[in-house]
Length: 381
Image (tube, rainbow, N blue to C red; front, side, top):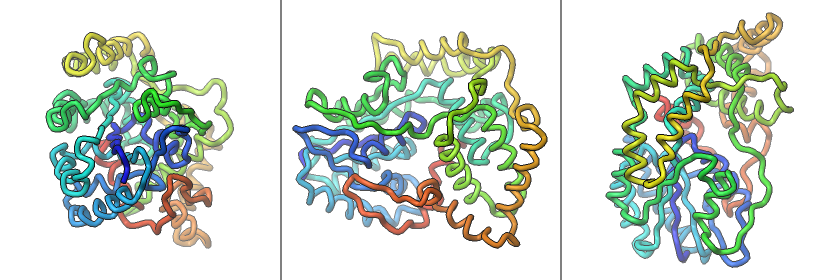
């Protein structure tokens, strides 16, 4: 059985995909410690059994199967990773650990990263556009979040610490605070501490999209949204196309980065300054990374609101091609339309014709809750 269990809790939009890709590829290497990552992707389906009522019946089966694999391993460290733990009640995870990993109690460490409020808002907005779940501008998205699900971090992370005590660690997702300014290097340091280790080269995972690409994605998603029952397809399309755009040749030098504008940065600061200060005091004192990032957002803001309209970024010819591709993707008459939709349904790896490698996990048949990652919706609304 493994000597230690490390649970990576996310948050969302804090480089979780990069960490998971590194674990799957075996990119975190040490001559003195072995790492067991029992999945070919992430443990979101496992985490969702603790928070999604429709999946609660799968809890015992998923945790039981994972526990057997971990107990059979003789690795020094086993890792569970799922950003969906952001939506999980800490007490529910604690109960599952007591039930399925009783021999590891006292040898469990939990790690979460938290992204500054302004950066998280911008990143969430881009993801919402990419997946077709929001069609308005950044100001409207900020207003919607304030009304439906504000970015109040402190109460949630306090619950994690109250439940797990010193076994829980929170780190700021701020470049200057990360080991070598890199999330994977920082995670490896948490995982292995002073144990000698190195990182194999790995491609950037889930990089930010340019404003121009987002405008294109918004147009494409708006066309597909007109088709009934298209939500699941929009999610898969957004994730797949986002990956392909990231892997395409470098963007033009004059591409535009999505950013808060000055008035919105001031509004975001007013909305979240109290929470930033409270989180700093509770977890990072005497440092103040969350407050500093929120105040710095104003100095990094652009002067005027950025347009997300396709006609402000794309040529008429490009808009025409987007319309044609939207028609192809939604047309039942296209000879290969159903095959194309089947590829997109299973996400970026299927589109590239490759499966997950490494991590000691065998490729498994995709199940329904993996096809449509409900995590995306929970994150955005």
